[in-house]
Length: 539
Ligand code: GLN
Image (cartoon, rainbow, N blue to C red):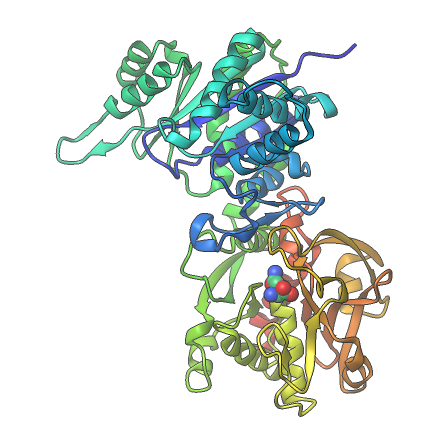
């Protein structure tokens, strides 16, 4: 028998960046721990079809799913916490909703009617929420609504929540996340912003069922009672979300606050007695009790932005925890790295990771850092553009092709060691047109990469237009760069290694997207292990 899917909405008020994504992911973790199947979805109110064309200054990293969707970075948190793959259906923007409605209008699907925000846009939003629950028969669909309530652009989303709450009754619940600021001059936590935020929701017809209060200080019972009274919820439905040492603490903090129990009660769901978070607790214990630490340099052009390399940062945390080591990530701005300061800036690093990216800014710094890693035998991981830079570095400094480059940056180079993929040559639109999502890669059995993966056939996620130029294959292999991973269908080089180096790997794909708490990515585990060895014996 088809069961009722329960729909949980997570909205935000007062301020952005309160951590709706982490709360959603933590709730999913708790519900999974009680044996439920859960998926999480993010609705973004902006008009871009997806975040693929945004630069990281806007919303941080662009996260890529198995099916090649370019999505909001919160989907990365969802996957890292729940260990369940997401897809295009898990991230929907206003732009995509309108695109769907307009294309239906052109096909004549609304023939004779005026197409309006209500009901057509809201129906399309509803469809994109319910399709997730219905096609996979999940117990819970958690839908996070981007932005804050009261924003003009989130109105249709909040209106959809209102309608769904009315239609689904107990099969729907709304969690509202707010900020309870502490005024140090008054020495008090203030509830008024929360009251106003809930009032804004009420004006739009939505009564939240649970209020999660982000705070820097514990909420006493008095404050909880006050919020409950002014916001029409029971005091047990006022949940404290105190600042945590790491995002990985949040599921356990939410367990203490009984967020899962509140959600189950509000939705009339029988509460399973057992909540099993053993693996999560084991991960946290290891994370918090490292036996040592290593310094890994992250070289990129957006390092000053906290969220630009989110998945890489988290994959390093997973890799470190698996080795019972703490990874200190030393961010190095590639634009500021040159011949005069490279030794000063990179001295003391136990591993060097060169980040993905687009365009020429900072690329010479990346290439210089790779030369340093190669010559000093420091463990190196190059991801996407980072791998392409390793190919350029090798061409210039080992093969003596002094003007070698990628045609992304220098179209006139006489040695285009990285060039545009054949299938990209006629692409004119920039949105959603890269080589995106999961592709096969076959690994050479006699390689370091094989030792890390312990298998020959892998699938990894891609996001790029340029590739290793196969005309140079023999020259590279003959001079000590092994091409150890190949996509056999298209004959594309996906992995490179340097033969005479303890740990030097460049990958055309993005391993960071697939690293989760439950399954840390083998390349990150191996890279951190190599850095530990370097810190002990290499220097
Ligand atoms: N700009 C490069 C390309 O398109 C690398 C992309 C990336 O690092 N994600 O191929």
